[in-house]
Image (cartoon, rainbow, N blue to C red; front, side):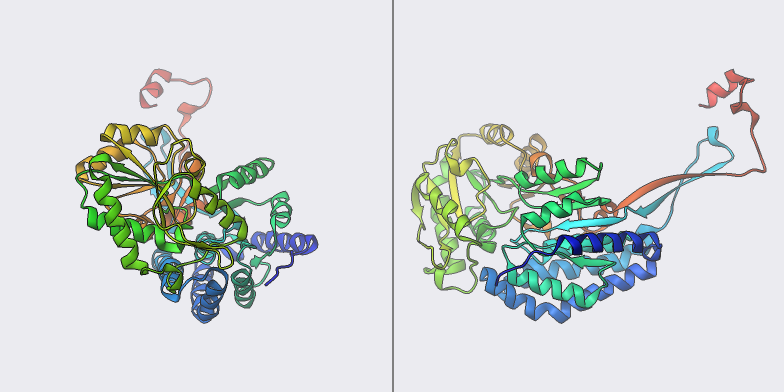
Length: 460
């Protein structure tokens, strides 16, 4: 399916409509926001089958994987906001010190305004609609920009949003990077972008022109450390699952392996068995293994196969854009496969002699979006204390994104800002401090010429 770019005229018209609608104050009412969240929930139920079929067509993503990694997360997020929005949005009373007598202080959460949400192709439903939940919850309007690399999904998403909301409140814009540039030339009150660090820099540069705040959910090379104390069978199964999801095209997929040299051979064998258990001897035949999104991505990934010796895997088919899960051994840290996020089912394996060496290897590189450690909990906590990453798991992978009650986001090169749960509400809100002072009492000490200043000084 081809995708036409939304026109510059349409984009300008929708931006103006949403500015006007936000200024009307219609989104300030909490009951209105809850109603829109429920509408989104019901719309997703209504369009779930068509979206599932589109995900299969664009990515060869099975219903089970689509539900687990896309729909269930959105449903859980909406339910969390419906349950807690009244409490999150209520004014917060704060203690006033004696020096402020007779004033009262509170903090109000107000919507930032008009939001732009740009989503990637790898989880095209979840990564477009999850930020939207935060925008609706906070009281913003939103323009949504899905990815052109999954044209069928993006088309269905636009139909769903058009069927559910008025353009002047929430609208979908389609097209390539020229459309992105047109959108970024507009003045928004917040931009929420999920994608690569390279494009994240472009978004941030464009936002700087209007001092627009940004949330950047990026990526990076998320290390997976397997220490000698790890339960190798369990570690292999969980790691193989995390790398198999979406064929490794996941921003928090384990990107490369750092395995203790004493357990390297045993772990490599366990990992091979784990992939076979999940996908069978012929992963190309299973319905539960996603394809690579484009020919360009396929060519980039297959070029990595020469960056080491193949321990297992390596089969690929360009016509289907299929690449078998592949373990690469004898990889140099300077090899191309170790220089950029892999975003595919290729796994470089490096070794370390002690935990200090593994920590040094991670900290010498850009901060990743996720870090995974398999071994004792105590050593895992020490590794996390000594390293920096957007999120982390000890003896697991991926699962920190599944809990809507904890924040998700990057740090440094892997992004800025967090969302999920209350953090989604907060990231689209401004926390405004308010001081209210009675006129019945007017303490004279703060006025010039500052009589009794020695007493005032003690109160400050």
